[in-house]
Image (cartoon, rainbow, N blue to C red; front, side, top):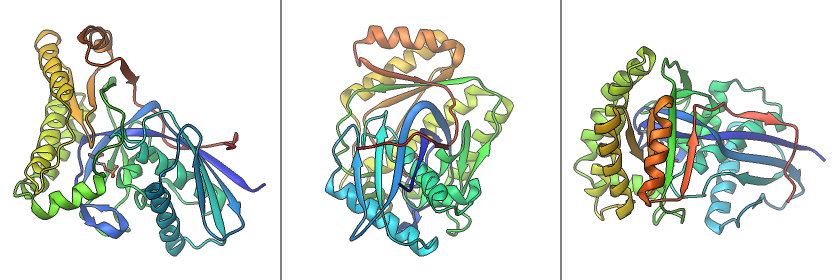
Amino acid sequence: MNRSTAYANANIALIKYWGKFEASLNVPAALSLSMTLSHLGTKVTVTSIDGPSHQASIINGAIKEKDLLRLKNYLELVRQYFPFDGFLKVVSESSIGISAGLASSASFFAALATALNAHFKWQLDQQQLSILARMGSASAARSIFGGFAALKGGVSHEEAYAYPVSSKLDLAMVLAVVDQSPKPISSREAMNITQATSPFYRAFIESQKDDFDRAVKALSEGDITILGELMEHSTLKMFASMWTAIPAINYWHPKSLELISMVYQLRKEQGEVYFTMDAGPNVKILCPELKLPAVLTRLACSGLTTDIRTSAPGEGSKILSEHLHD
Ligand code: PMV
């Protein structure tokens, strides 16, 4: 049977994007910077099938109607840019929670784009592959690359690709999961509302380039203090724009704030420990690898969560020879 499989890790944005420049093609409004995680991602197998439509299933979960529709729309959009015949069955298996702000869609669409490229022998390079992934979920473009990656925004479809960014830092990222249930509102919808109604959105976008440039410099010079401060600043600016949207968008849980207070306290005692959050209540903690034991001990004692995932900078997307069968 003609099938192809790929794996991609999730990534967490250090400098956030929020909002679209070109919604139909998922071109972000501003550039962003991320760390690709190790061992937290999604495996996708695509198989050519007889019509009349695309199909999908998830090994460790049930597929929702709206996700199937999103997938079908994506595949039809891809067909317009990279013509292919027939229909596909897409089977996936993820080691992270779905739709809970844990970047599962980033790893899914990066793995899917990588599998499609192999399946149809398009021979796209990583830059083109990142564009293909971005058309499914903008953050997915960054998961094509390992380590650290940037994604361009506020540019045309052809120019909105991701690229690798060098780092001199030995970093770890800890995911403190407080709630894995699907988010109350999709990031796509929340972005539209924020962009259309928040008086603070413009300030977020206008300061993005400066934050990004300084964060890239901090990474390449090995300055975690500047990087961490910029990450928190970017995170809070993004949420400030969401909270001031009409209606207000709030992904936070009381425990999110408690975890952030814990990070502030740890930073006072231990130095460089920083937080970020995405479209969900879960808190991600960035620290030098050496400080990981202290962070994990404090988290375990906090009683705020028992679901803790630890990651280092991970690999980019890759082809696998073992396929998923549902
Ligand atoms: O591209 P999406 O729909 O996965 O949205 C990602 C949005 C944030 O995670 C909040 C920010 C980012 O740059 O990843």
